[in-house]
Image (cartoon, rainbow, N blue to C red):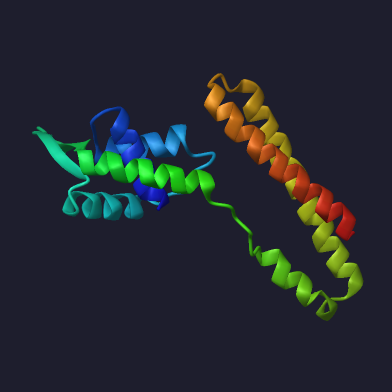
Length: 165
């Protein structure tokens, strides 16, 4: 769902070629969208096949490969809006790897377990600081809201880890 949402969202703003889509995701969206290059091309192929995006033009390359410019179709806009609504409403009742590890924590010596949790707490605090620093430098109000969301989640994780210790 995420690759399709990102591709359709970007193409709803302007026509783009595949590399431009990847570059935009990896620069403008990298702090909140973890999409692999292969899944983007796979999703673009599926979206093209289903008629949600179409080739608008092909720019012939001299020494580099041709650039295929894609645009979103009416069907694609409808799908984008459906995916957008679904993504906004989706609630993640997570199953985090640490949760299963906690279930088996008694297999580790208590001192080692506490050390690992302390290390995770330290890392989480560093991540929080990094996100806060990025948020302070951010000019885009939408990106700031995304960072605020991440900050709240990270603070909750830190509080939970402290309680666990």
